[in-house]
Length: 602
Image 1: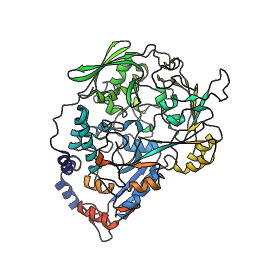
Image 2: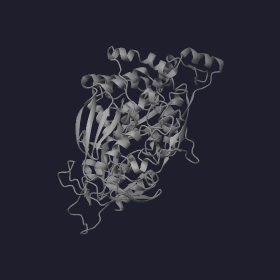
Image 3: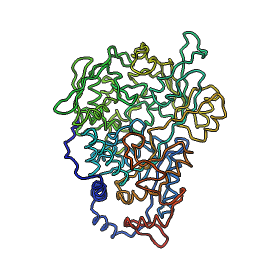
Image 4: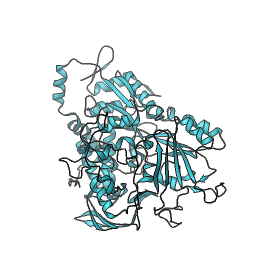
């Protein structure tokens, strides 16, 4: 297990931290300024051009519009821009695995943005060469590294101050730009199940919270089926819980694989774990975890403490020490680095020791889904994907489609048809099946349905139509605002709108010029009119934001949205760039324009 080094306390006020951003960022991301200028001097100046990668409109109703807005404002500022749409898995393979991009527009996975420590693997420089969600930007900033370590190793007001300084530094140096937090829009029927209003259909706990309506016409001893529809076909093709490029929302994977603890009601609570006993070990947090009795994998094998220990050993190195270097799993990287070691006490008990820090941070590691040792220990060999270029070595565990998953969740895999449908059935040996009202949640624990069917459809409008014609109970993938009027016209449908933690953002590849320059990125960030996008692209079903923690209690007051971005205000109004202002700001950053007002490489 990786061990986090102790860091000295940061000195100075927030003003001192922010005052040193430019110098620290240049040191960390751009290298020696003189060397850059010497290289440029040997080459003729040419217009700067940027390629923006994103997914097409039928995969995401908003990302392509954000990309078009940015391309337009870049052109107005004298920067040539080209949009390159591609399938979701190909986008994330190029961005997260191969790091082959300049700019991209995406949506951050929802469950990862609840705590400042979720930014640890996303931005710490030590992850810059790894694959997956850990620092895909190649961002290196000494101030950010120190603040990430400080928020991880402190608590109380000290941690809160570090988290505030961290958010300010990120906003100033812009490795990525937080655009907006959208509302998750869903169309549901209420004639068979209740509970949609409180939870919605987009997470496993929300689905498990549903109840059968007492007036619904269910036959006695009928196997009740919950019917969902989505435009995202990936779950029908790949069910690997640790494959970075195939997961967006984990709704169905999280019904198949479960962790020791789940986060609900604002806290991390025991789930597969029966109870937790916290203590310390060498001044670091440690927890003794007692598993529930009679836990099983979907193939009938017992789930034991050995599987827990295996999971925490496997994720940091999927070769299990069989190769010279480690090959960590791209997902859950930040959480797995919190664990120092795991020891098995007996079949139902493990002791987990964490790196130096607070219990509040350490408990995040308990939300990693568990993997069966007898399945995944066979996937440690080096692997290649036929016909697909993947930079660097990888293991079979990270490229395997996992066609018939062996999980431990309340639902087990039954069958699927690629790009068409997926069927999961209730796992009778799961602890929720026999639970009564005193189960681990704040609602009746036994699921309200015996089978879950997911039907893939081509568009948002067709997904809504399936619900309207009683061929589905709810949509799962986020609907575009264009479907709102269709939902409103039907007396059988209800529109659910819930603010998502999965923010939209623009990411920059800081490994290459000119995006390696934080001043350049900062100025490009000012070409994004977030207020305009929230109103005209999201139809106000979104909240513009200046920080990835904007929807949490960690947001400092001076980063709250007040009609404009407090750090990178838009260089124009109503979505239109003031070209003269933009050119002046780029010149202040050290760039020049030619006679045709085209921005040139420095």
